[in-house]
Structure formats: C-alpha cells, structure tokens
Image (cartoon, rainbow, N blue to C red):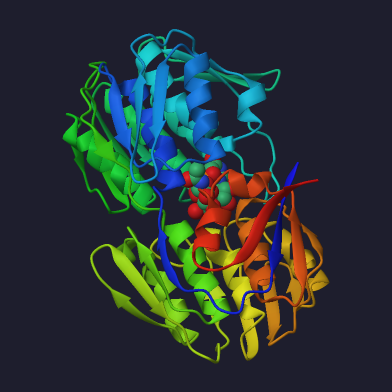
Length: 424
Ligand code: UD1
C-alpha cells in the first residue's frame, strides 16, 4: 500500500493547474447512458473514482477509452453496446456514487439492479430519496439480498418531486431519469451545486429542455424514451481541489496561483479564507492567494451550495489549528465527518468535539508522526497539517486521497513541497 512522506515546508511558490471536478465528472459519465452517440469528454480528472465508474460502464458493455495527456485529456464513452443492467457489489462497494447509473439505466432499459452502497466512513448515507423519487415516477423497487431491483414496466412518467433533504447525487439521478421520461418532471428542493448545474446545462444543450437551472426548482421536459445526441464537452474545474490548494497556501503562508480555477464556484470558501486574513487576485480562470502572516480564527457551518461545502470542512479544520484563537466548525451534512480530528490531535492539535461541533484552539505546534487517512477529504487535511508539522509525517492509507485528487504529490512537489509517495 502506498503512503505519503511529507517534510515541513518552508514556503511554497508557483502555479498549480486545477483538474476537472470529480463530482461533476461522475454524473456526466453516467449521463452517457442516455446518449445514442459516442460521447467525448474533456478534462476528466485522472483519479481512481473516475476509473471505477468507467470500469462499471465497461462491465455493462459500454466502450470507454481515455487519452491522458499532461495538458489535455479526452475520454470517449460509447454506450450503444451497453446491454447489461446490473451494477454489482464489487464495484459499488468501492464507490457509492455508482448509484448514479440507476436513474439513466432505468430510464433507458426499463429495469436496473444496483448493489446497495451500504454505510461509509463519514456517515450512513442512505439512498432512500433517490428510490422514493423513482417510485413516484412509476418505478417498482424492491430491495433483495443487498440489491436494489428497479423496474419501470410502463416506462418512467414525469411528476412532481419534493426532496425532503437536498441531495446532490439524488438530484443528478432524478434529472437523468426525467430526461428520458414521458412528460414533465418538477424537482423541488433540488441541489444547486455547480456539478448539478453542468449536468443540467449539457442535457439542456442535448435536446432535454430544463428550466430553473441554478435554482432549487428544476423542470425537466422528458424525451419519452428518445436517446440524446450529446456533443463533446469539457468538465468544470474542481472547486474542492482548488479550495484544498488555497488552504495549502494559507497554512504555509505562501503565495500560489491556481490555473484553470473558477472563483465563482468558490464564494463561501474564498470568503472564509478572507476572514482568516488571506487576500486574492482573481481573473476569469486563475486565483492567486496572498496569505497573511497571522491566520485569524473563524466560525464555519457546513451547508448545501452556495453555503460552505462539507467537502472543505476537514481542510479548514487543519488550517484552524494554525489560527490565533478559537475557531468553531459545525458539520451539518454528515453525522460522522470528524475522523480526521483524532489524527490531528495526535499531531498536537488542540481540538475538542461535541457532537457535530469542533472547537479548535490555536495556534498549535504540530509534530510529524504516522497518521492514517480515513476518507477522501480527511486525507487532504492530514497533508495540509503535515506541511507545517515539525519533522516528518507519514500519511497512510492514501488510497482515499487517490480517489479524488489528481496527482496531488506532483502538484505539491512542483510548488516546492517535500512530499514523496512510498510503499509500505
Ligand atoms: C455528494 C458529493 C460529496 C459531498 C456531498 C454533500 C458526489 C459524488 N459526492 O454526495 O462529495 O460531500 O454531496 O455536498 O457528488 N441523504 C439522505 N437520503 C438520500 C440521499 C441523501 O438522507 O437518499 C442525506 C445524506 O445522508 C446527507 C445529505 O442527505 O446527510 C446530503 O447527501 P447528498 O447530497 O446526497 O450527498 P452525496 O450526493 O452522496
């Protein structure tokens, strides 16, 4: 198993190229199930989760091929040969987002089986809202032997769906199901994350009229089974990757420029970094961070977009260990998303946890040691802490990191970090 060995960084400098967004890419790859043509996708991130979904589609009979270049990459997905409709446990267990194939397969073939994802490190993460919405659209769903068995004997029909909670992959799944359904589907309390917005925009450009894009009420005019012609497109930049490198700059008090980043998607993150003392120079596709010498404490509550993202909570918690004073970080989306706290404590951080609220007393002197990554974003928090910890930190179980960060150690090496990938 690989691990990262990181030495304390004096200061970082230079540019980091931001990759395509993992969380945008996953629904966009699943969307190719709705296409009659071979779809070309540019700017997919080269990360394990993308390979997992491409493998899942290949197992179902699709033809996928990728050319990974340093500057540009392109993947083609041809689902015209897709005949299988069962997403098996061996793949779904490695990536919960595999549930994203449920809506499009059901819409296209009228039946689908997907292994239930099960629990995960950050919480229970049920998929009940996805299933309830599909049932409203006419699907008959049974759970048997760990599998979701969904059939739509008379096809899916448009209807009014009101999500009890805002769900990102739930919204994407139902938008894709509604795209081929008969009639009009309205989703109220829809997710407005930029990743959902891109999915809707591309469907809209491919012949599925969608009203209300970027709002909490989406109206989708289904094509009644007619498959789509989807033109080549490029995935939006990864706002969470960008946010993570901004935290790397802030924690090491370094000036860094992110190329290919979209500041419009990072409103809440930039605003919290500003409260902590950083300043920015922003262009259409770059963000330069000018960090402050003194990091100020902060109060953060994670919520759905456009509020502060839960996927940046762990990184800000690491940053807060280096802030002067007491920071309060409240996690509202996932019940168990503080697994990084005990590892940061082992490095010397002063953090107390009370339910879903972390109180971080800074500034703490951190020391390098062996730490264990527990989930994707928790892993990056440990990397950030390691950049300022005295001595050497070994971050183990980085397969979590590899799920979502494209070439993290290379990108950090390029800006001067002493970080290397080693084998246990
Ligand atoms: C997506 C992101 C993940 C991010 C999360 C919240 C992808 C691939 N993953 O995950 O990185 O952390 O959004 O921004 O895009 N819920 C239910 N029932 C459901 C669905 C969700 O109770 O059927 C609950 C969840 O347990 C959670 C909340 O709703 O408490 C939000 O979850 P959701 O938005 O669905 O997260 P994901 O789409 O899985």
